[in-house]
Image: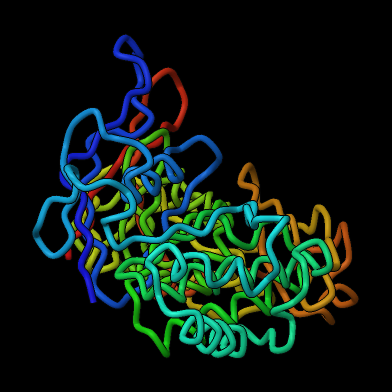
Length: 363
């Protein structure tokens, strides 16, 4: 298993570009784990992946595998294999020939190639399709063939570039389960790119969140929900409730009341108190509560999402599916705010607006 490290990695496609596609990125991707590079389109995720693969050369910085720089190695000698968003299968080859292509290039014996191709197709749950052409398979099956082609050469690092984005919802779920199953078997260091935070949370041991080519936060998936570093990160993970407040030592004062400050949060002074929609209690019994009017409700099958107004403050809360009938638009509901679900974000006051600021958490 290989540990992949990025050292102050920067990529500019033109020397005079004001903004780098990737800027001063330092990141460790532990051996045997799945690291997901997450962020909106254009944030530098795929560019980073291609630099690791050897398809792009960085403007500055270094990439190491187990402490050894790979910048001087061509892509085919790095031990990293990339699976693209579009499968890029050879249409004139059979499925078996596609899967065995890497072994053929390495001049393995034909009998061994046939044996390993058959075994690999079994692993990706595609037995009996070796003689098919790619166009005879569904999109999900083609993606499995692309994955089999990558895994059969036993890479040290597996690179996945949005591998599920072209699949229907139910096929994405199947492929996630397959990828996780294969990873448990192989323990290959895996780096995956996606813009879908739900997909990242399901797949990742650790998530690296990028905005505009810069690393914003690296953490286990659950930390992004409970301890985001700033407003933009919280919003990306579905956080929409931000209440102005002031932290004074162990207390946080807000218009809603006074809360105990989270012990592991280093934000002081002016702050934004954030709580996720699913953590607000409808008709709750938390020590701090407030009456709010139901502005709108949206039935979503397994849950109901409510827009609420308490004075000048607007909030979003989530309840179970049955709450759609219990809390009607125009009615008043008591909202409980559990103190153990609060988190603090920094804020700057300027021009009459609350502006986000990058904060640091105490570890």
